[in-house]
Length: 302
Image 1 (cartoon, rainbow, N blue to C red):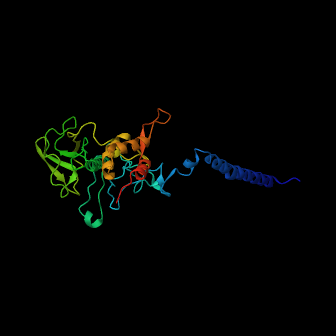
Image 2: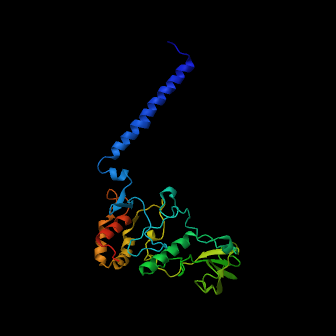
């Protein structure tokens, strides 16, 4: 039987739809599912979940917080790398801060912030500085970093005055510490700059006419607090920290659990992954796995 052209075209389209539905909608998903059940792949396909005492407590592929109800770090646990994903480690909102290395000036809250609920915005530099200070305070070490104030904000000045041909201000007429707010801190991180007194920033004032000058300070070039302790990863879901950051936390975790640092150090070594294929990436410590090993081996009493 001969069908009109339009009928033959629709029948061909229907056959193509049925074939593609079987191949792509049935056969391919079943093949992927079957491969995922192969020993060695099943755990990864199921989300690499990790259990403790019969209860799922997380995924080995996704970082998480180890904090108390008040948000403070729990001293008996290793702390993860900072996260900018949602409220932290949110797989539905994976993201970075999208702040670049030149983002060094905070946005202070306006004069009506208290009634409007405004809080301003931290620059990337201040985020790094505040995290470094917090980690230093927690671990009992110096959290000092270049271009950071002792109070944990970016050490950045706005220098006012006539500019020279090279763009500098050789004879300032006024200097403001941009990231230190009047009424929040008592005094600027340096008293004078080129003989001119430094004053604190006032919310709502415009300092855009000033020359922005970062001040390095006397912090060592190689800070005690490692970089991964103060910077968030691109995904915000990093489940690992560097061996250096783990080593920094070992003493505090050991004291909180009442064991020797060497005992904790051995668990960290067991939870350290080497370079992929022996040459890609860097050694790294899976925080969740190490914390679970601690709870199993050296549980906190009381």
